[in-house]
Every structure is written in structure tokens, then in C-alpha cells.
Amino acid sequence: MPLYILRYEYIRLANGIASYYRLQLLYLYLLLPSTTGVSEMNTALYLRVSTADQTTDNQELELQKVADKMGWSVTEIYSDVISGAKAKRIGLDALMKAVTRKEIDMVMVWDVSRLGRSLPHLVTLLEEFQACGCDLYFHQNGLNTSTPSGKAMFGMLSVFSQFEREMIQERVKAGLARARSQGKRLGRPPVPPIQVEKIKALRQEGLSYRKIAKRTGLSVFTCHKLAT
Image (cartoon, rainbow, N blue to C red; front, side, top):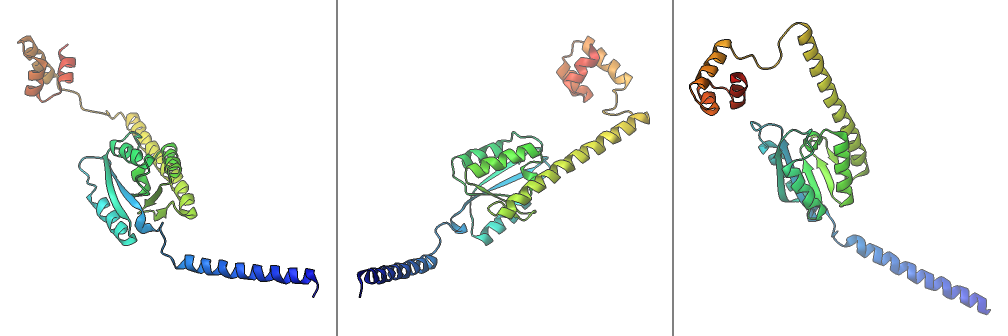
């Protein structure tokens, strides 16, 4: 048998053996348990309400149920009682510091509006999360930014949330303008003249503005303004 034929047969046999072992290694790799599965994800909850008379308990309860179902380990809970339009929040700032330190793999939020409704602010937060390798999960919206569709839908919902907020502001401004055109007085009602005279009289008696405010039920600033 010519030498070049022997060389060809040897190379084909070697490639066949290498392919066989590559398939065996691939099969074993697929059988191994994943070391980056969802069970290994350190998860944080971010909860927010706008006013003090509201509670974050319902948000925490539902998000904890989802985390337990998905096998995510909730390690931290951050919360704020503040308007979503404000970018500076104590709880959110603490959350972002933990994300920057790569202590968190997933952040769960009740709704995209809980994180913020300002489109530039949301885009900035998303970029920071992505740069730190942290994903976002929005319960009400069914979004998970670890998936391509979740990233796309997140951007769309941010736009709609900003649009909704601007529409509400426009409705409020239109309502105030209509009330003014109808001659309606806006804001707090004026202090009655008899109350103003009482404040001046108490001031002439030598009472401090703090004591006058306590007697009349008005603020110290108002008493000082009406007495001068």
C-alpha cells in the first residue's frame, strides 16, 4: 500500500478517535449539574411606596413567594417611602452600592413604576445593573432582563410609564387652569381677619411666635407673616 494512503488512513482514524472523545466529553458535560443555575442567585427585593400611610408588606409577600418558587435566595430587602419621580432614595442608593460590589445577582421589584418612572433615570439604572452583571425581575410586568425579550420589553414599558406620568401632569395642569378661569380660589383658604387680629394682639402682649402658633393652631411661619 502506498505511503500516502497509509498516511490518509492514519489521519482519518485519529480524527475519528478525537471526535468520539469529544462527543463523550460533551455528553458528560450535559449530565453535570449546572453551577450557575437560578438556585445560586443571590437575590434582593426592592420595595417602594409613595406615602407613609401605604405599606410594602404586600409587595414583599408576593415577591418572596416567587423567589421561593424559583429557588432564588433572598439575601437583602431594601425599601423606600418616597415618590418614584425622585432619583435620590436611601434604599435605592444602598441597593446600588450592593450591586456595584457584586453582592447581588438578581433584583426583584413589584412593578417597573416602583423603580422609577423617569425614562432617563430608568435607562441609567438599567445600564448600571447590566454593567455589574445584575438582572432585574418585575413581577407585575412579568419581565426578566436576563432574557432578550425581557430587555426589549423593559425599554418599552419605561417609555409608556414616562408617557403616562406626563399625561397625568397635563391633566392636572388643565384642571387647575380651568378652575382659575372659573374664578375659583386655589390653595389653602385665607386666615380669617378675626384670627389675624388675635395673632397681632397676642404678639403685642409679648408672646413668642411659637406660643401664638400653639394657641391659634397655625404654623410659626404663618403667625410671623401675619403679625408683621
